[in-house]
Image 1 (cartoon, helix red, strand yellow):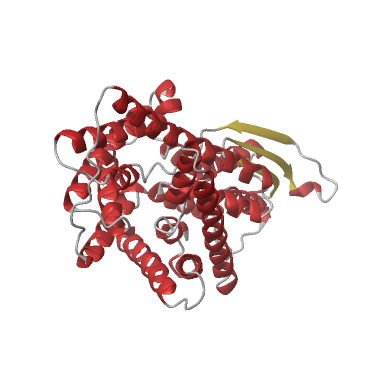
Image 2 (tube, one colour):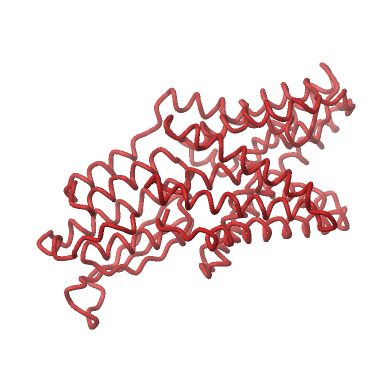
Amino acid sequence: MSAGETITQQQFATTALNTRIAFLLELARRLHQYGTSAPRLEMAVAGAALRLGLSADVWSSPTAIIISFADTAQGEEGVAQTTQVMRLAPGEVNLERLCQADDIADRAIAGELGLREGFRRLRELGRPDTRREKIGSIASYGLSAASIAALFLHSSWVDLVVAGAIGAIIGCITLLAASRPRLAVASDAICALVATTVTIVVSAFVVPLAIKSVVLASLIILVPGMSLTNAVREISSQHLVSGMARMGGAMSTLLKLTFGTIAATQLCAAVGITARDFALPALPTWTDYPALLVAAIAFAILFRAARRDWPVVIVAVMVGYLATRWGGAISGSLPGAPVGVFLGGLLLGALANVYARFAHRPGAVIREPGILLLVPGSVGFRSVSFLLERDTTLSLDTGLLLITLLVSLVAGLMFGDLLVSPRRSL
């Protein structure tokens, strides 16, 4: 929400209390649905309520929102007149609709749009995805998997193609699970089972593959690196319930993914299918930069950015990756990975606030896609995999690296906020 253009509360004093509350509840619902973290959602809704002449105590978690409203006209002795509880599914980042919700709220609070009209427009944002959006989402899974195989795992051309194809299959399963609650509960394990089985079968009967690299690349979108990062951010900002709940959800996703991969491996071994785990010649180093561009475009589609925001998203992804890579290279005697991740988070946090301040749009347009290549979700996946394989030493070592990277990234984002103070909640 915009911090400037102060509008006096008296302008909304004649507006019905239920109208104001309904508008704020719908705003909170949309912000939650489009992936806003608990601290930013609570700040945004409380700030909007104050400018509408209401005092709001907001409590947000990944699956629920509780808001108590009181009319500021009652003064300091006023008590909450109504409390609303909303049970919600965990949100997913949708940058276009998040920006639209932010614009509707700004215009309604500024008096350019009636609250009833604003409520209606917020409701319209809940429309189902179009066929074109669904196809784009499936394509983004495949492009993301292929680009990760090239960018981080430095696999062969064959690994890249297979990872991309499996990523598209996983995108289809994820899309089906969105409208089927029973499938959604087990979708992560099913995706891991399918990805591992297809990889092993292709490697056994078609062409040798780097099994672990292909499986990890094809599952990369499902690995909860962003959830782990948001959980640590919320815990560090004293939103303990939301942070721990999000952390628990991320760990359960890791366990389901790991179970699916191990189950598929055991099933293939039981029926006598043995993969030819052979590393083909790696991709040349010049492919990193085309892969980075493809990844940036895939993330713009994945996060449903508006076409006008695509250049910003692409630049944010490239800046985050290059800052992390070069930061690690110049770290000297310090550990390269944590230093690079810290610098990448610092730069993206500051740039997101600068963009929000001057473009008058949510900083999430830069922050969310920009840190996607920085989040250490794959490290957490490997840590749990090693643990279930009873390699406790390597599991603990990888787990410590996960914690180090998470702390480095969150610290970078926090220092970025200190370097350039945010003037918008989102």
